[in-house]
Length: 310
Image (cartoon, rainbow, N blue to C red; front, side):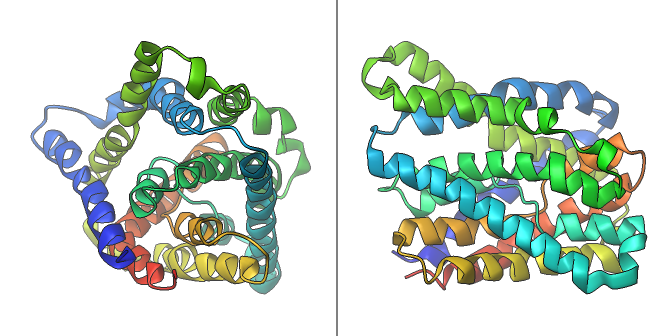
């Protein structure tokens, strides 16, 4: 398979979903103040449907179950270790909030909304690749609300193991995994599975519509001239995926496992970074710029990195 053309076409298609949101916002048909309600639909309904659907389509097997658990461990380790390396490299610069935002942006990626459809297209005969995307989302949420929030604030009081596990993403992945273990593919009614699939299929377009609306409110000059989003994009789109890919090369893992680590690690900066910045009342524009710039640049970087596969 030509992974370059497959990833390029699918990343490009995903980016084209930005256009309707951008046009609707520019024409005054929608306003950015409405995004809170739409984002709630995305977070609490569409995304859980996408995660559950990816997992209930799998045939239960001991090997796949072990691989999903191993994927959780591997992605937690690669994210945590890379973040620790950045922490040490930054030295005194880690005292500035902007540098800490940049570091988190270099690690946390849009592995669900953006990454899942890409790995599904890249590995059409390996449905476990989509499941790996779900597992990566779970591991990123665990990291974000523990080590990530501590790294961002420098205060342990903001770390929350409850938030790490009691959130729509982790709960829906956990429910999907339990249904997978119960062999839901063989007994869940087709009508219900079809409904979950339809709702889940709305996730990527809707998330990109929202990003397009946000893009319409941004200053293009600021987006492309601020240095920190460019540095964060370099880390997120190039350095972190190469680091993660190298980490798994010597392990006795399947090619799909290793390729999924690479592609999912190469996804743009995650929206959860913006949520963390908003929660602590600092760095929201910077986090938004990192997400937008890295998303636009990913149309080049993900296809190029896919050349490392097989």
